[in-house]
Image 1 (tube, helix red, strand yellow):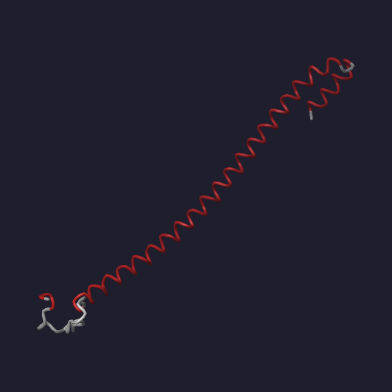
Image 2 (image 1 turned 90 degrees about the horizontal axis):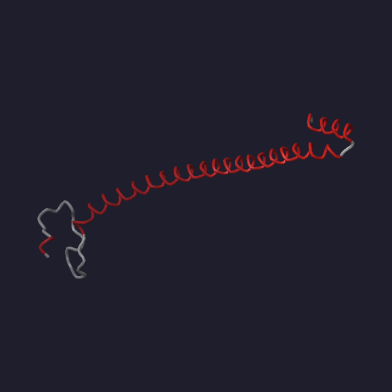
Length: 112
């Protein structure tokens, strides 16, 4: 605002020709200030985008960690079941001991 008032006073005193030289300096500074404001606005948008992206990634990581915990529990349960079933398994089709009683210690299926 002060620059505009000063430019009007100089224009009135010098009848316009000298005022162009004075006002160009102010115009250039104003253009630089506008350019800096534009750059600052772009940086602010970039920062906001990064924050949003970071927040989204944190949520996805938390979901994945929860999913991993559930899957680890499933794997542990399946391992326990496999250990329980392993003595009862025989892969020979005609085997009479294909399914063994886990409490029956008299049969030794490993000798097959």
